Length: 257
Image (cartoon, rainbow, N blue to C red; front, top):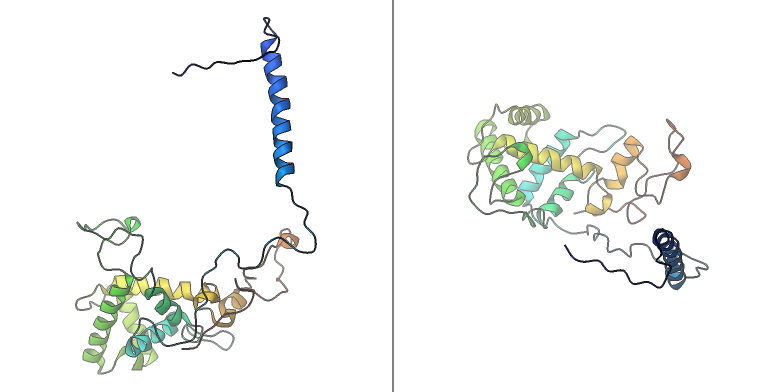
């Protein structure tokens, strides 16, 4: 144990040291904090000392073609998105709200490559909480799953998934979900679960990522978005928030293909 030595010029007679230490320590600490605060204090006039988006927010999804999906793959994903989130008179479905665009941009980026995750062997079948055990990232799994689904639909129904009627599409997805349908060269159930999660995220994510067109999902559930604060509404329960939702950029970002 290191030796602690205290050097002082105060009264060190018995019974005086503790009182000197507490009194002087508190006084010196208070003085130090006060001097530090004064040194860092700034006079703010006119506006806040920062600008919007100064913290390097994500780049909004831009206009342009598909970045990862082929045209055929995109047709399938859009059809799946509409099955998962069907449109109604009040709210756009998965396709028109941009869920496929969201997934496309995610697969074309770090998420699709499993960046930051360990993807080296050996691979073992682990628990659900341990995540996927595979060298292939989400982008590769999507490509495998979409190809396998297309082969099944053409073989069983003579058409790709996106051109089937709604009842048949829903039946196929239900069979994948319940492990009643096996796809060749792909885990059909795992593929469905992945697409389901990603489409849901695209529907509710900030529009800056390409989905949630016109903030359709936020308007549907009454979510106010990325506003500065809600202090005036903390105690106002079961009241509808009167202001429209706001995205991270201060408006609804959307990009057509």
